[in-house]
Length: 532
Image (cartoon, rainbow, N blue to C red):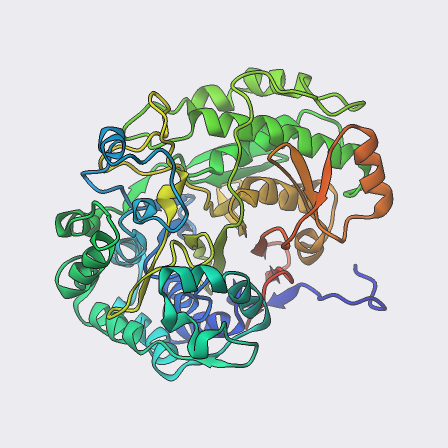
């Protein structure tokens, strides 16, 4: 139990249903949908649509989506991949002809066909009780009437104001500046686009005038996109077989590649072979081991993770207990590895923005849902008449011949966004997720071990200060104790204070023994968990 003399927040408890999102308004919309007879998936889509309006730096209908859905009493976890594909004309040969040897985050060549709207419609048709016509109404209202910008949103917005200025996204700089906390921001063009989708479904986004404007906007900047590419995106979202591993009496479920959930399972497999170290969750040995394990699995991600529809991704080999035991033997408690064995640690570009949310309804259906523009405001390329900010997920492609993640026609890039689900004895017990780009596998495994191995309550498990190995250094949040930082430095880690908080997260634990729901929302964002 937390010390009530100190600042902080408690976990949230409820009897019947609960939602946890990164913005209060989205959480309340999810609860409204649940009270109106919608299920967890309906509520998640409605909340994601609201977030696409009121947290525009992190997410939008011009981005991608992944989802894990656990229907009550089915013993099943359903996975949906809602990531988009590169244009048919995108290839290394074409890039060489154009003289492109590297990608900039604001390049039209980083824009893959957005998958979110296809994902929302596909999920609702298969598992929802309501349609987009009803579920988009709150988002339409916020886009039309505006919303007061919240502090974390304003912080992120100000940080990339120059990026928006340089891409000409002036609609997101009212009066020439980023909105301050409390300023009301309206998006009438986006409201009209959402109305069209509510009326005509996902087809309104991928075909017709909205798609034509997005294509024209991209081609005016040198993009290779066509209206045929966007039309193909209508059915891009697909159900896939989730991957999982056993850990401490639970099953941990993730979406398969091209997502990075594989890394969470690898991290747990490595760490699970150690005895719980002394010193608690911020003990030196615990933190050092986690950093070293992350360096190894991120190395493998950069070598192998790609679109399994176009290249072989050795999932079974990477999850083989013998392979993970071999990685574990590379970790010394006495010293950070000065170098990693091949394939080596690739440089990771910085700064990702994403929203993660989860919902459990009164019937026990559970939804773990993530939607993203990748970088803050994605590519910064705005289709002005439709109000769609386009993501830059294609920045994750490699421009390197022979690499599994090399760009290719209609290929999906390696993806960082990963929803998670925990089950026990065939029943879902927790949807969870930690957003934050490259931090996400580290963040999910950090959260799970905080909660299940070190016994922190759900909120404490999210609150605990964080670390991330990145580009040869270890980023640490300012909350990391000085003694721990000194210990890590003595072990050979080069430390740097993270310039932004590392990620954010939500989780809802289904306490079947006591018949209640327990929710938590990350204080690094503006959101909250709530239930009834």
